[in-house]
Structure formats: structure tokens, C-alpha cells
Length: 264
Image (cartoon, rainbow, N blue to C red; front, side, top):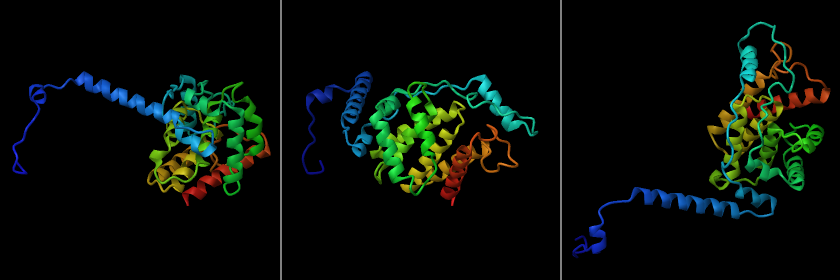
């Protein structure tokens, strides 16, 4: 009666007073499927625009840590004495398969080479953390011997090369990377690849002004570095012992300094 007119309703609406919950749920699922299809079809062969077509979380599942890996880390963190013996580098290898969405991102050698060139041309010149020679040596083995940590690092390198966006909702790759990082971290795979991935995620978030998330990501990277003993080579226990080469030691130094720079 707001406009001086009587309210009228169609008879079919007056008679139907019940709601079919199952039909509503089916309709919601149908709309979500249509949305996912549109996202996946919205990609382009161009490096920058193709990033928005990445599925958000499909196929990324955690790999629970084994008892052996848990015991190694528990002894390292809880044993206050210096009797801890550094495990071999493959002792914390999760054996986790690279998730399907990440495989689709990195399956092409041309795509991996494009990511490498974009990263070292755009980011490395002012944020020199990753050793180019080591990366080039490990990249050909990414699919011959699946390395989930290296796949995570490549995905983060791709993320930070993405043009500046003021709305992270427009970057599905960001959410894929975050979930992938937590899955690898929760599987107790502590490595330089994981640490460097954490640093790149923090760099991306700080560059986009995402706070306090960026601040907390720096904290995560710092704690990972401290667990590995990068903050004090003389006094702190070293998870993997002394580096085998000077290049490995230099990369560790650069990674730790990258964390300190972000923290400042």
C-alpha cells in the first residue's frame, strides 16, 4: 500500500509456501561449476594474462608427515644439547607428488623458461636471493624426479612477476600459491626452496600492501630460517649441517638478508 495500490501476488506464488532445499543446493553447485569453467577458459597465451586463469585450489591436498620426519624435527627442536646429528638432505623428502594444478602450470619447458627469464630480469636485479646456476641445474630434473619444493618455488617466482594488482581477488594464482605453500610446509618438508618461497610470498604481499598478512608471512619466513640455523652459523644448531659449497653458503646468506630487508 506504499503507493496507494493494493499488493497483488500471482496465485502460483501464493500456493507454493515451501522451499525445496535440495533444488537450491543443486542450483548453487551448478552456478559454482559454471563459474569455475569460465575461470579456466578465461586464460591467454600471454604470460601476464594467463595467470588469472589458474584454478584456485583444485587437486592440492596435504601429505601428512611421516613419523620419521616428525621425530627428526622433534629431536632437533627439543634437544637442547649439541648431540643432534644433521640428517642427509633427502631425509625430510616427503615423496609428495606435484599437485595437478601446479603440473599444468609448469608442464611446458617453454613456460618454465619464460618464468625464469621474467624473474631474473624483473626481480633478481634488485632482490638477488635465488642462485641462478643452481636453479638451472635443478630445473631439468623437475619432472624426471618430481621435486615439490622446486615446483613451489617456481610457482612463487611466477606470482611475483605478475603485474601489480590492487585487488588480490583478481589473482587466483595468489590463493593457489598460498594453499600450496601451507600443504608443503605442513608435510614437514623444510628446505631452501620452501624458505625462498615463503620470502617471495611475503614480498608479493608487502608490495601489494596486504597487511597484516604480509607482516605475518615475514614472520613465517624468519622462523623457518631460524629453524634451519641461518641466523647464526656459529652458535645456532644447523638442521642440515654446513653447506657443501661456497655458492650454497652465499645463497643462504642472501636469503637470510632478504628476510631482514623485508622485516625492516
